[in-house]
Image (spheres, rainbow, N blue to C red):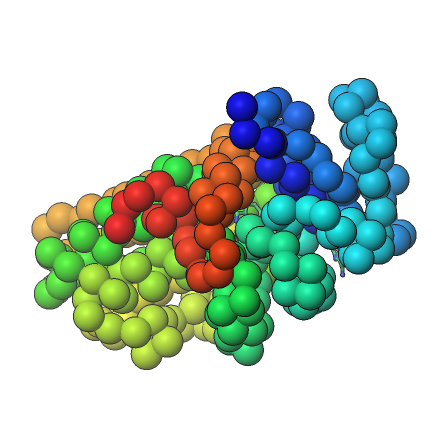
Length: 269
Ligand code: NAD
């Protein structure tokens, strides 16, 4: 058997961090190398680890250099500012990266692209297999329904989510824009900016709902005269994102550099 991949979980005390720890412990091809979080929020991760009874000898730390030494891949579900710090450290230590964090600025996304010249990175706002398929279906639908159809992206998440629209909603909008032969930045309209008056043709609208413990619902509506197509994905557990992220980690095993997304991981390109 090949040596298990040595995985660092960043944001180990968070909601996704816990789902990732469970995923790593359940997979014989992976081993937890270290668990990383902010110095003031690391206890939860350690508690979770002890609960699983599998962390003896594993570093549960806030020091990035300590966490990365000797690791193969870092899985990051945190906040953009943390991801940027991890990006620099991963380049320094030649550790591959899975970036699941959302809410990056244009400049931060450019920094990820640049870093991928030095290390292999999978970057995807949604690591679920179902959403990855949905992205392909939306692009195809927009390509066919490219005249006389209005496209709206509607999403709902739990009350703690900080960015809006979700990274997945934006990715779905990008796929729709691509299907129409456009760039999303030229045709996106955000409901929370207050859109009034008649709907402009050719624009892609976004609507956001927040509440309760909703893990992640996304619907893309393509509405024409006399009919509409609705493509929907509903996540019922964070395990779907964690399993996708860990599958992505294994996909990078033989890669030394390059920027990939879940379509590469699932062989959908
Ligand atoms: P969370 O708030 O439960 O966890 C975030 C973790 O990051 C916390 O443990 C926190 O301590 C840590 N953190 C925050 N700022 C930090 C900093 N500056 N330095 C170090 N650590 C820091 O959030 P969550 O629900 O687990 O989501 C985390 C991120 O993952 C969000 O951006 C979310 O949108 C994204 N997400 C992506 C996917 C996907 O499939 N790509 C799925 C779910 C969530």
